[in-house]
Image (cartoon, rainbow, N blue to C red; front, top):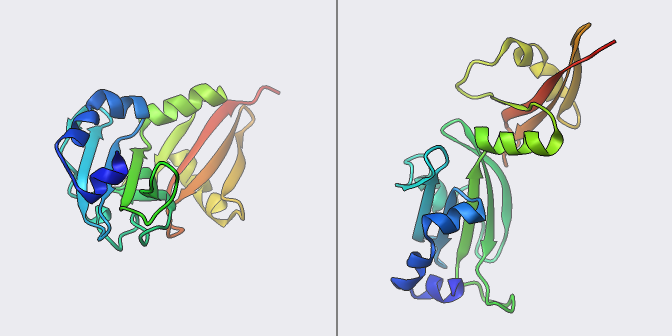
Length: 193
């Protein structure tokens, strides 16, 4: 149905993309672009209020051909970009037939903002009290500011740091698709000796 919709948009397909559907899919952004890279459908869920909302101004230019999110027709792209200073995980895939054949009818883009609820889900999975530290336009906490150079200089964008006799932390630097630092995620845990 997505293949047919990208070629000839109609009123039926958008009705299938209700708020409940997007919440069940776990996506904040669902966009279909035609073969020329023009959006034919964009649905955006506010991750805080869990309601459908208008496309944020900062997202609009990223949903156009030749943007960071939109690869050449038929190609895929996944990664992380910063939208208004917030990390956004995305996947862009060609729209093919159910048999996986083409030519592509357009591009499907799905994405999720990496916010408190996503970090909480990661915390539950890892059994760690993870914290997300945004690096652009936000003052870094004292702890992250003190070890940020160590994380950035690390060949694998990670750092383990002993803060004091009682606390140890582990951090991962999140880079965007242009390899620029966007955020760090990590945990500081008790270190009983």
